[in-house]
Length: 505
Image (cartoon, rainbow, N blue to C red; front, side):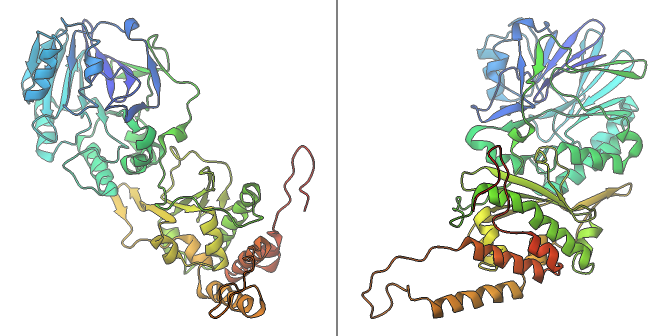
C-alpha cells in the first residue's frame, strides 16, 4: 500500500492495482479564500495520476471542494455522504457514477476494500481501507465513539495504520469547545484504537483577514501534540510518521518506508515560514505608541533582560512559583510594537537561562501559555503606572493558557488557572505604590498644569520622560527580589551597535 500526501487532508491511497483520492483539495485555498492547506504547497494537477475513485468523507467546504472536484475526470466514480445538496452539486458537475456511502457496507475497488465508519454526524464518515494484507483506518477529522472502536476491532482486528487529527483544535464539531478537553479525547481515542503506527492528519489554516482565528483553531501546536503522544505511549510515539505535502509512505510486509518530497506533481513551498499559521492571540485594543524617546530597537534590547528577571524571581521565590514548576510552565510572550510587528520570547520556569532569545516559531513552539501585550502596556505594567487588571479590562492583554501534563495514565489538567509570571514578578503593591508616589510628587512640584479650575493659562503639555519610566522598571526589578547589580545592569537606553558605530545619546 502506498500513501501520497497532498496536504490539507487530501491523500491518494494506492493498492496493487488501483488508487483512491480522498477529499481532493487541489487549489491554493478553499472555503471562499478563507483557508489554505498548511504547510503551503503547490500541485501540478495535469501531472497527477488518474485515480480509480474519489472518496468524500464529509460535506463541509474543506472536504467537498467543488473547484477541486471540477478538475477530476467525469468518468471517475464518486463515493459521497448521503446529503441532498452535496449529491446535487456532484451530479450538476456532470459525474454519472455516484455512490452514496453507508456505514459498515463494504465497497470493492480492485485490490482495496473500503468500509465507511460512523463520524460526527449522518454526513460525516471515517474509512477503513483494507488491501495487501493491511488495515488502514482514516478517521477523516472525526473522533469515533467507544462502540465504533469496539466494532472495528471485532470486524477487522488490529489497526495497522491510523490517520488521526492529532493536533487539530476542534476535530469534532459536536464535541466540547474546550481545546484541552478535545485534545484529551484525541489522545484517549488513539490509545483505545491502539494502532501499530500513526500519521497525523493534514490541516488547513486561516489566511488573510481570517488568520487571527488560528490560535483558536490550533491552540496546541503539532510539536506539543507529538510530545504528548510520546509521553502517553512511548512505543507508539516511536512509530509516529510526521508527513508534509509531497511526501509518500510505502507499507510492505509491516515495514514503512518514507519518501520525503519526491512526488513530481506536489511540492511543499520551500520558502514558507511556520509563523504564517499565526498561532497567537491578539489583544482586542489597537496598537499604542511607545513613550517619547523609547525606540523599538531600545525596547527589543531590554526585553530579554526583563524576562530573565522574571525567571530569576521564580528561582528566588519557590513558593510563589511552585505550581508553575509543577506543571512545567513554558510561557511565551508576544510583545506588539506600534507598527504591529512582534517581539517573541519564551521563558521556561524550570530551566536556566530563563529567557529564550531566538524568535521561536509560534507554529512549532511547545509552549503551554501565551501572553500577547502591547509594548507600551508592558512598560506601564512594569513601572506600576497601570495594573494587570486594568490592562486586561482595556483589551491591551490577551492570554491563552493550556496548562496540562501527559503521562502514561493520561492527560491531567491544572485545577486552577496559573497567574501570569509577569504579575507575580512585577505587578505587586510596591511597584504600584512607587508609581503613585511619583505621580503625586510630579503634580505637586510642576508648574505646567493647564486648565486648572479657575485658570485660563495656556501652556504646553508635559513630555513623557522615558528614562524616568525605565528607572521605574529598574525599581520594579528590585521589588522582584533581584540583586542591585542585575537591576542596575538594565540601563536605559541600552547601547545599540550598528555598522556606523555605537548609539549616540
